[in-house]
Image (cartoon, rainbow over all chains, first blue to last red; front, side):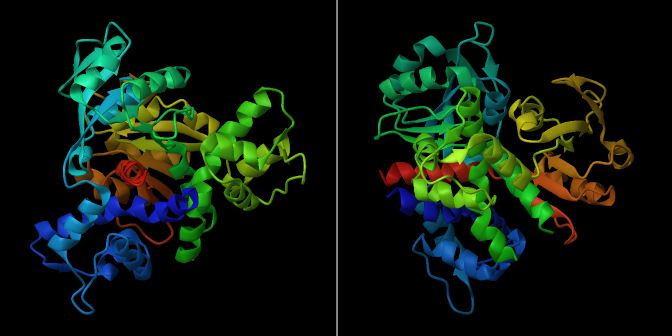
Length: 209
Length: 209
């Protein structure tokens, strides 16, 4: 299963950028979009785009390309983004604040419904329209909200503690921005986000020019 | 070439997390680390880890694993992270500020040497120890500093304009956090960072549990 996940991951990672381009074309009044057009926008080869899109189950017309509305529907449905998913954000530091203010998430099915911090100076304040709650009440609040997804942006030293609380509160998926990989039960999914991975790719591409 | 890049990209993306784990082991006084140990930390299969590490040219000992110091050296050298690379950051909004304060970059060979914004209220202020300069002087400052890498965190509507200025100032690599894919000459590398791509993976993994 792990192997399967790994092999499909690059395709899944590209779907949000496809969605962005396809939505722009729709706004311009287009009804069809070709794999080649998407590929050009993203500097990919078109066979890659068609292969990636095929994992959503959609089929393109040989000449016209993909019908835009069903294509958007297929990607959103595949990703589970056809309805907004509520999430908790834990740790309102620099990165946490930035994510609270990130406009793109709502477009991608993600709604940050609650934010937590341990700093008394932050508790009760409002950041980008979201009231910061006391991290000590996290367990009960997450249960009350019925949240299943958490975004982890605490300092690395706090990551395992916070993850333990999230798991006991019923969280099923953790989007982890810390450099620690928290240990969680098998039923909980952890997606590690390493900001340096994109920089690694940039460095290699610059060297290979 | 594009195809080659795409097929190696997932391996390259994982190298920074390997580096993090290997450095931790080194701090604990270990001299060797096995692919299996790294794999366990990151919930990967060990054959994947060994395959990823092989792109740096390092070879492990059949029983002891990889010698830690040469392994760190091989990864850093492969990524070009054995010396700090200076970069400009353009657009000191929420995300830009967060990146200025991100401690992990220095560990990964990245030093943000200059930051620019167009907002008169921000120009001249200091954010996480870096003085914000007037975006209008970006061209000349980037030349003065001799910078080759830029981090693009402006609003999407400003992305193409900013990229044009960066290119004319001699920037060779753009780490792009906007949702626009700026058009640049072939000699300039653009690495698009889409924060939603990690969320897409989390959603799929939660569904596939």
